[in-house]
Image 1 (cartoon, rainbow, N blue to C red):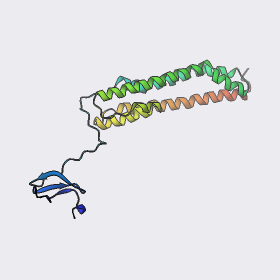
Image 2 (image 1 turned 90 degrees about the horizontal axis):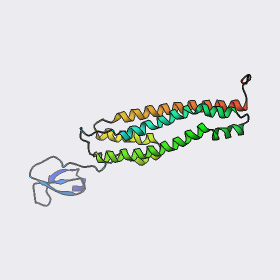
Image 3 (image 1 turned 90 degrees about the vertical axis):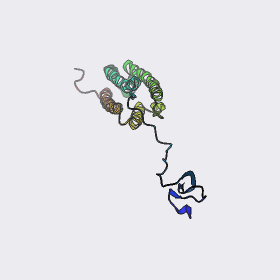
Image 4 (image 1 turned 180 degrees about the vertical axis):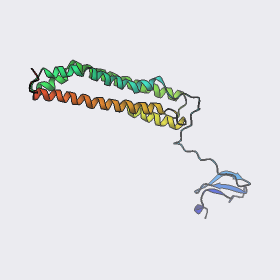
Length: 208
C-alpha cells in the first residue's frame, strides 16, 4: 500500500512517532509529532553560489581572450609578404610552394602555434585561480585544447551561474574577438586566393 503513496509525512508504521517521512520508495529516519515541511533535497549537480564580494575575472582569462586577436593582427600584417612571394611565380605548383615557404606565412604559423600553447597555459592558470576563489567545479581548462572560445564561453556560463549573473564580460568579449577573427580570416583568404589566381591567369596590363 505504501509504495503507491507519493513523498510526504504519513503515520509512522513502526509506532515510534506520530509521523514518519516516506520518499515514495522507502521510510526515512526523520520523524515528527506534527506535519513539518519536507526535508530539503540536495542535488549533486548543483554548484555552490559564489559570495558576492568574490571577483570572477582574472588577468589570465583576458589574456586568453585577447591573444588570438593579436595573432589575427599579425597574420594581416604579414599578408603583404605572402602576396609578394606569390607574385614572383607564374604557375600553380610554384605558387603553392611560394605560399608555404613565404617568410610571412612561416612567421605567422610559428607565432600562431606559440600563442596556442600560451593560451592553454593561461587557461590552466585561470582555472586554478577560480578554484582557489571558491568556484565549485569551474569549466575545465583542457577545453582550450579544442579551441580557446570553447573554454572562455563555457567558463563564462559556469561563472555567471554561480556568481549571480556576473562575469558576462568575458562571454561578450570572446564572441566579439571570434567574429573579428573569422572576418579577418575570410578577408585574408580572399586576398591570397586572388594572388594565386593572378599567378595562373595574369591580369592583362598588370605588368605595364
